[in-house]
Image 1 (spheres, rainbow, N blue to C red):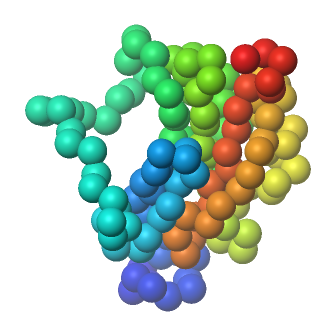
Image 2 (cartoon, rainbow, N blue to C red; image 1 turned 120 degrees about the vertical axis):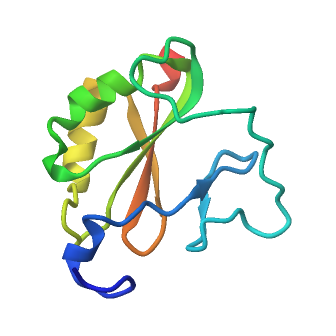
Length: 142
């Protein structure tokens, strides 16, 4: 395995995603340190808070979904992800950047999103290996 920080694609297979923080304007900001940007205090976690899984049965405002090309059908994954999403919720689809192992073409995201009742609004850089695509329900459906 290549050492961290190199351009060898085999290094991202075991790489942990960069932490993405969402300020009040809803646009994620990422920094390679995994810490929130200066001037922003991270929210206090609830005691013993854990990541949610597919068995979670309450509603959420945001879904952050990590997906690689070999993870299966993206439309099916998006359909599963929007189940607990509120009417005005947002899905941030995190995928490897172009040229990285597991990259998903923008056209594939554009094709999968409407199948799940979503539309693409923007794309951001979320670290050296990842990009984020913001997906929302079309305004007429909100």
